[in-house]
Length: 385
View 1 (cartoon, rainbow, N blue to C red):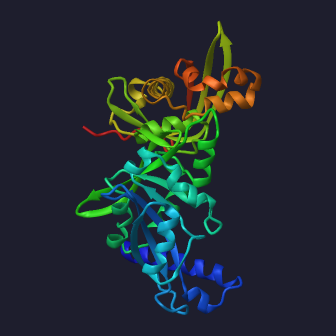
View 2: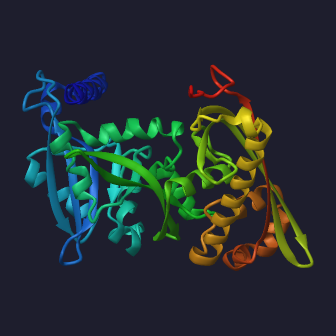
View 3: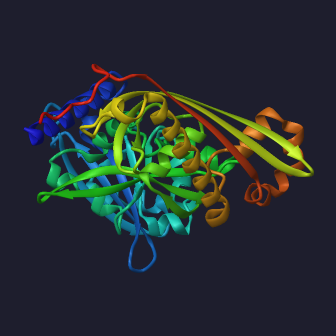
């Protein structure tokens, strides 16, 4: 059933792409002469050259047969433009880039620097800036893209839909290439990208996007876990949903709070020549799970759970900020950008040495978590004698 749904999704996506194209000035012959690029994987080959793998979709050789076929085409070269042009000799068709949905980059290439990888894509008139960017959590980016051979689906189209739904989990940032480039060019904030893995279970493989790649300039310098990513999104005030796990008084996993909304406010001030920042978060939640037969009504109240959730969130925020200051020197939160927007005169005093200022930034955090509802019942399941 899942395989059938995947094929249907790919077919519908292809039909939509073709219908968009046929409403323009193309004719059937022109469509038949094009190979639609759904997504690409970028690696380094054994000689250190760029290796580009394209997930190419076409109409099955005939414009009136809208079959969701695809093939993988790989070619290496010194530059992206060189590779893209030379790929025409392999496909026999002009590559059509305006509907590409995903760019997956190997960690090796990401750590060497991405400007030489993404400059062509951002500059070329045939590409679009709303393509999603990923860093591979596997050894290569190509092996992730090759999952379509086992899922029988156009993987890049699935990834695009997955990122649109990411707001429900918020364990990875949603980053389009225009946003990534904007962060590279903006002072006071460092770029990030989601990490994509191959999830293996019961002999089956599927894609899973969780975690964050951290960049200083255009080079990847480290990673965040899914939980750390959620904390980052809270600090950046862009969290749309997700779950807060809360322990009971004994430190055992006991409660799941679904995040309804979150609001984060930053306040900057200079004290004795040193920049300080105060972070205030207000998170509204619903109690969606109680994993103990004793229930919270027996030995603790909703207020107890709220307080413990707030204390844990405060600790998580401080730990992540300290990690960025001490290990990566990466302002992934946009503290500098916020300072520029709210206190431009103060920003002018520190902008030329922002990495140094960020590393020594004094941070205080105050979090408030409220439970607005307990879903359909306010009581836990109670076991009989």
